[in-house]
Structure formats: C-alpha cells, structure tokens
Image 1 (tube, one colour):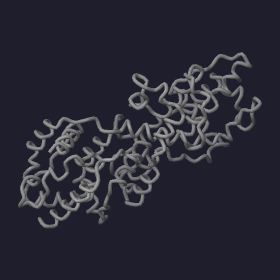
Image 2 (cartoon, helix red, strand yellow; image 1 turned 90 degrees about the horizontal axis):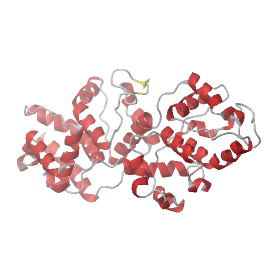
Image 3 (cartoon, rainbow, N blue to C red; image 1 turned 120 degrees about the vertical axis):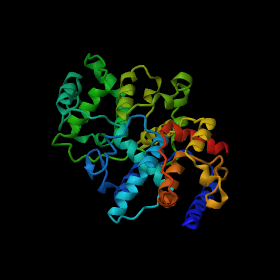
Image 4 (cartoon, one colour; image 1 turned 60 degrees about the vertical axis):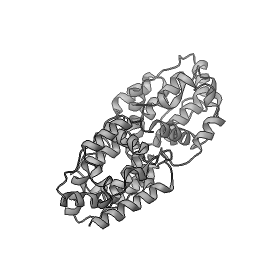
Length: 369
C-alpha cells in the first residue's frame, strides 16, 4: 500500500512539475455534465434538483466562495463522501485540474449569479418601473421595442446584462420622447422581474444558458471595448465585482447608463459572457495566504510525517514549490485522496480538518518551500 501511495503522489508531483499555475478558466456547462455523469447528483442536489442525502450545493454554500474554500470543504468532507460512495459501490472518478475548475464554475453559477425572486413582486415592479409601456408580453407597445416573448436574454444572466447595456441608449431616447424619468432599479426588483417574466406562458420555454466559459478573449475584449479607459484605480472592475451577482451588475449598468460615456459601445452576442468570465476569473484568484502561518499548520497537523519522510514514499513539499493552487489541491485530493486516507487509517493517523484560511496559508507555504 505504501508503494501505491507513493506512485500516486509521485505522479501528481510529476504533473505539477510540468506547468506553473495558470488563471482559473472553467466552464459551468462542462462542470454540470461532470457532476451528472460521475454520479454526484445521486447524493447532492443543486438548487433543489438532485439527491437529498447530502447538502444542496447551490443553496447551502456561503457567499464569498473561493477555490480555497472549495478545497477546504472537499478536504474536510472527503472521508465521509468516499465512505458513502464505497457503500453504494460507486467508483471514485479522477478529477483533473480542468475538471476541478469546471466544477467550481458550475457551483458559482448555481449560487452566485442570481438571488431568489418573487413573481408577484416582479409583476408589480414591471408595471411600476414603466417597462410595460414599451414592452408588451406578446406584442410591442412602442415602435422598435421587442415584446417580452422575443427576449432571448431571459435564459441567460449574462445575456440580460448584454441586452440592457446595448439597448440603454435607445431606451433613454424612448423615455425622453414620452417624457418619462429614467427608472432606476434595485437588484431585488430586477430579480423579481426576471422570475415573473420567465414564468409567463409565452416565455417558459426559454432555456437557461451557461455563463462562465473557458476562453481567453476576455482580456482582448476589455481592451478593445475601451473599458480600461475608465475602469482603473478605484474604479477597477474586478474588485468591485466581489460579492456581486450578475443581476447586481445588470442593475449597476442600467442605473448608470445615462452617465456612462461608453454606453454607445455595443457587445455582440456572447461577448458580454466572455468579458464577465474574464473579470470573474480575476475575482476568484485566491487571496494570498501567509507562508509562515502555513508552516505552523503543517507542523500542527503532522503533514511532514509523510511529506518530510522519504521512507513514506510521499514527495516532499518542495516538489510542488511555486506550483500549488487550490484547484490543483482539489484535483490531487480527489484523484489520490482515497489512497491517502487508507494509508493514514492503517497507521492510526486521523484525517485533519483544515479551514479556508489554513488552506490558503498552506498553499502559500508550499509555494515558498
């Protein structure tokens, strides 16, 4: 067994040694498919859809979720999950780094881009904010205004942001021509309006679409659209997105559209998704940990009993220097953890619990080591 553990960890070490850390780039669509195909939904639900024997991974996650918190949460609950999977004769899926990033994107999409809304309040807000004066449900109420049944963006949070941005100038002119004041919205109101409109008979077939997508076009879009001309320093976008949902973003862009100099810039279909994916990837970089604190945690948890002992077969922490990330921790844990747990159990070593802060500090220590 010791040789099996050594081979597994050495394989992970060799993989890590091949490439330095890269920015998080995950696809929520791929993450959802991985979640379903590997049986995760047999126990876990996501926003009430799926199994009921394990926590709901959509409603049960705290806000401010980061890769480090994902790594710490999986680490702490892994033995219970592996035991449950063994009892059900389920195989242990291997999770590579791309899979781990995709799963993180999927969980983020499920939890953070929208808050629960109320259709009744949404109907009232749709009327009170003058929306129905131009946008009828099945027919346009104002020349050039699409009826709600034709709003393809209803199925995509990013698409809604894109549509509201692109049409803000046109809507501003329409407001002025009808002597209407620009109607500012709150995030709650827009969330309620979305729920109301999505549940109308004419729109129920609109499918929700993936937002976070892998790709590298976000930086070039940010530059090409001139976003950096205004959003620098205190107005830098990535930090301002922390804790925000896409509904929050849509509301901010809508409320400030009359004053924003870039309102004439149009986004082609899918570009807003790429741009927001890029900005969220920046946001989700782990906050830097403290290497000295990480060294103390490693000592307290007895990690060096294996990772500082050549006879154990486990590689030293220095093998991962400069290459440790939370996503890589998730991948290594899921792929090699069951073997590690078996080895620790045979030696009478308890599985240590690790907080999010401690996980960040351990990663900082490994990268320094």
